[in-house]
Each structure stands twice: as C-alpha cells, then as structure tokens.
Image (cartoon, rainbow, N blue to C red; front, side, top):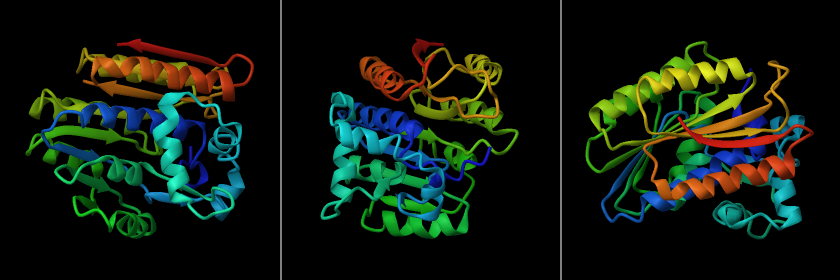
Length: 274
C-alpha cells in the first residue's frame, strides 16, 4: 500500500487519528509538568488539498470536506475543526489541512518539547518550515523508531506518536518493539499507534503481539466497510497505550460518529481494551 500522506490528507483516517490525538494531548497537558512528544513518522506537517496528489485521490472531500460542510460534528472534533479553520483564514474554501506535526505544535506549551522525525527529503524540508515558528519543536531527519527509544524518559513525561506508512513488511513488528523499548525506559510513557484496517487477520496479529508487551491498550477500530477486500484500506485504527482512562468516552464518540457518518453499508465502530 502506498501511503504517501499527501494522497490521503484530510480523509476519514486523518479525522479519526487527529481528533483522538488532540483529545489525548488535551488530557496530557492538564498536568503542569513538561511533556516530551516524539513523532516517529511526521510527514510534511501540512498539506495543500489543491495539490496533484490530493486531487488525484479526492479523499479529503469525503472526509474533512464533509465535516466542514455539514457542520454538525460532535464536540470532540471541535479542536481539529478550529485548527483547520485557523489555518485557512481568508481563504474562500479550506484548501490547507494540518498534519499531525502542526496540530501537535499548536497544542503544546512552551515548556514542552516536540521531536518530529521524517526521512523523505521533500517532506522533511516542508516539515522544517511548518515547525519553524515553534521554538520547542525540532524537525529531525532520523529513523523515528530508533529516536523514540533513544529519547524516551529523558526529561519530562513521554508521549510517542507512531504513524508509519506500513509500506515496510516489518512496520507492525517495529511498532510493537518500540512500545516495548519505550515502556521499558519509561513505564509511564503514553503511546498512540495509527494503523490501517485492511484485513482482520493482520490487525488481530498485531494486537496479539502488542498484548505480549503491555496490558494497558485502548483499541479504537473504525471500519468504513466490512474487511472483505485486503487490497483496500477498509478502515483505520488508533491503539493507545497508557492513555488516561478519562479519554475513552471521547475516543468512542469520535470513532462511532465517523463510522455512522462516513461509512458504507456494514460500517462499524469498536472501542475496546486489549
């Protein structure tokens, strides 16, 4: 699967991932102590939905486009919609969509730290520009998995976002290994892992492997359609490790709303603890 993010910016998976991410960051920044955020696969930071890749897929129109047009998304989407609107002040429509790096940087405080890892040359150049105004944020051209392990527990509370393209055959194993390594260094660390949902066997195997390294995982499955065709991205999931219990109702509301509003026949939402 080619998951170059510019093709998919603002789609249903981004809506789930980003709404949950912002809810999680809100919960984590209630504590006054500094938060150290490590983003393993940051991407470009922000995306032009008028660009060739976005226009080729047209996934944003069925995602963020619908939420903006219909205007009745529940409260847990408010922070994401506000970020999109502020990024597009003065625009006739909403041609720009914030990626995770910009959303994270906007949500953090000056006392926090943010490390955004990206290996692609073109995306890294854009990422540096996006994060330029934020003195506490660093764009790093480095392997995100290794960086998460190396920097976890080094001052402040640790939060790691793992959002790989899943083009490498070992990405699922790397996610599990990173959870193990980070929690070994910092048992109180919080991690959020995004995954595509193509077929149930692959996802179930990932969750089983994760259960061998943690007993504190919250799984949010968003299925736009039954998982019958493994060649399609039939949905997405967010797996949160060590997340505050108070976030669970918001995770459920976000996932349930998207399945009902954007899903096809047979769409479903499932939020459960592994």
